[in-house]
Image (cartoon, rainbow, N blue to C red; front, side, top):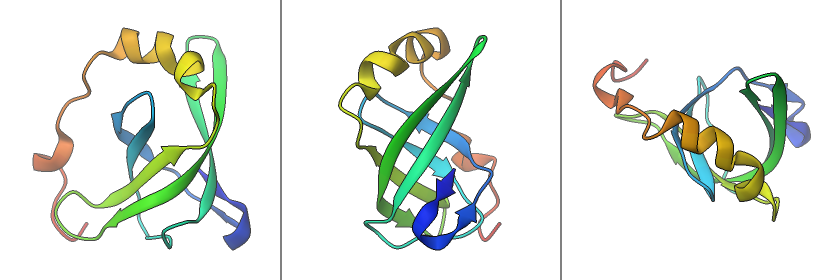
Length: 98
């Protein structure tokens, strides 16, 4: 995930993925409203999508809630979402304060 206005590149993992947004683990917070660029790796291709930070979780399941800005994000992610199915609930696996 790249946050251009902060000149920041973060390695994140999607913990939840839907057609309108995602929740990613993150080692640091970003202010709500920050625009970011995401890359999803799919079989043989990279899907790039712009998003905005809509929520920052600093306790429990730590990470960033992101809303997709691209109007066609849903269509581009559909094959990946269908193939993955529901993502596991990683909240139990992530230590609080990690």
